[in-house]
Image 1 (spheres, one colour):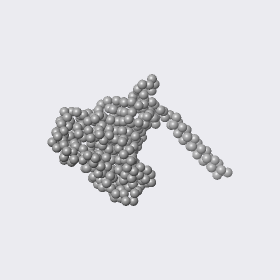
Image 2: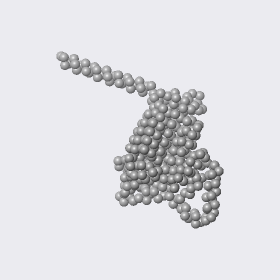
Image 3: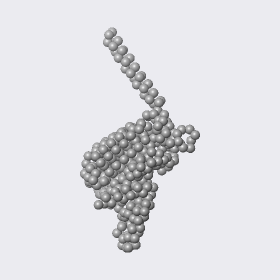
Image 4: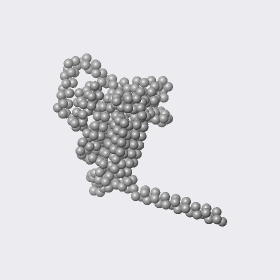
Length: 367
């Protein structure tokens, strides 16, 4: 009889605990709200920052298409989505170009579907942020496309990072996942690392003046995932490492062999500063590479390099052939471009201060 009573008491306690947890979960779900940002709407919020300030942890903010001139400070657990999911028509530019248009310092923040551009610092800055999801953004025309400072366990996924002085920079950051991004046509390194370790980079498309900064220490980071049967960024059959291209069309993935036709280069790719990509991607489906290139702007990159006084060599039109055909006239054009840069003509969509800094950086790297 005593055992029956004890068992009944335990059952009641378990039931009560389950009910309490269910009520807590339901209350939490019920308290999460959706906020809307639309400068032209009569109701809702006219700026993204106003919505962030009004939001509670767990809320979702939907942003209508438009250009928002703000320096966002996101310090709470919110999800921020563009309504269109299209970075081309929902753009954030900084009110103060010396600061980032998007600065995230909170935990578990989602920021997705935006064009972020024209900053003398970084398009998207994660400072002390943890477990954030940065997805489907286009970060361009800034000193850094995306900058992580003392950031941990974030997922940088499916972004286009292009036309910046450097694409993605990690400073004292660890255990972040960098995957499925187009990091291409940046004027300096695609990836810059400083005292950052245990990060994983895979299924990215790299095509930059310098894909990884030469003096970066990369041995403590991982440059491929476990080889998995799943379609990759360039429509090959395996998720593995990254696609390594260069501006001249002679990158490792563009010239490696794939004798067994599995879409993975037969040999590993050794990276600057140590470390290696043991499963670099091979262009098994060339049209997939063309499709990715169509999302980028090679002409804007060439113009940006010209304003910096740097010649761009391309496989379709090698620099050596241009010199042979143009002779002194080519030299005159180069001088004129350099003088224009010195007189302050900005690169496309970016201020003179950034252009000058980029030129100094690039010349320093060339030395």
